[in-house]
Image (cartoon, rainbow, N blue to C red; front, side, top):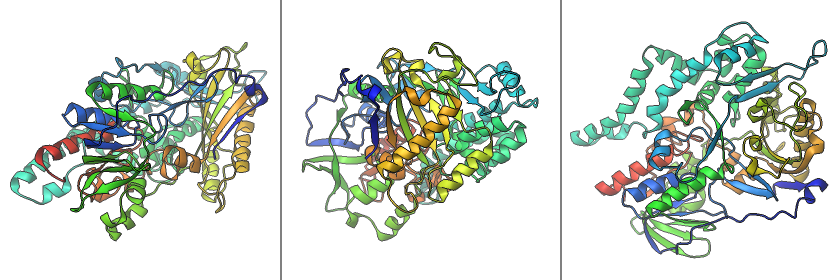
Length: 574
């Protein structure tokens, strides 16, 4: 089990009451047009299906709605974004279409957004150096100047490439089979799927080679071209490996960086923010929007398997309590592995297909640690007296990022089956901007850590392993912010197997499958599945395991909903 441990100080706060979760009060019917397995932020597709006249129900196995985007009160009075912890990649058209602001979504924007303190001795009594980055270009150049005078317009360069890719995010991949087979009319219809690709190419223009390079190259090749500063390279390199079992020197890490700057919040490109009340706030807003259209949403409805009729088509689901619910189509928000290995009857799928499913990479380097503290971390590089937050406290705080070599060493340890002894740490303290998350004077701290293996030298994680790794992490935080360890009132430690067990993330992978070059676009999650249709008629994938991949909130659901609506209209694949 995941370790959720109170200290003595934390136990004294137990008089505070736990808040219960709310669920839909509609009665579960026995027949729907569409059933969606998993109630994450992919209630997006439920909303669009219902808007299209398709009676839809969402079935979530846990007590709380949201998949990985949930808010949970792990310790009384402390409300955590327990898994996913920052919002950016929610597509603007979904935000507008579903009127998410009206349905309660409120986001605290962060500026500055990135803080990297150094572990070093200050000069002549000055504090250690730090690097803080935000939206002000002049201030950024001053910060970079502490380490290197070389000017760089890297943010504008990345933004241009990322904005060109947006048409590909908001549409299904090119329909290769439709273009190359069938009647001329069908081929012409399928050819329309080329339009987003053409828009992307036209927007890139002469920058097409640049996009090709950043997608295929190691991120260090790109960063070395742009920057002299090692702390700046290391800070930016973290976004090239975040959530991925890869190193900055591995090909493809450049795309992971690009993936994380594709976002937009409140019309600000590349921005990341804290959702009021935690990440469950975005899931609740999407669910409210879906319910306003008539979607039925249920928690604690654990699907046992997908029902297949005599003609080999999906006809509904059977819950683990034996309840059968019938439908015309079934959409799975679970990972492809869970969908086909656990939920779909074996006889409905070919041996060849199952071999391909077994080859999907779900390797994860992540252990997430949620920490309740009774005072704000006070960093040697940017001291703030009297428990008062500074601008840097609202940032993504990068620790152990002085040198890229530190990241490389951490990666190599995990690849050899051992948790990193000097892990890459990304700390966020959302309660600095959102006081509803913690009791007065207290804070919630998220530690997104890398690199940790799924198995430790071939064996399962133990409680002692979790505690030992968390102790290592806290020891490193203590070096940057003395007093941190004594401020801890509780900690929740989620290793890769815990992320898998609790949130259904196969392998603990936060993206529902690695964002590697062989698992993107036409090959996500497999070449035969890139159009969201499975080999079983009436069964669709709609989660982050599909194009455009994990983190691009709502896009796979939007694209899957369009595919299903088209199939229902034309009586295809049913």
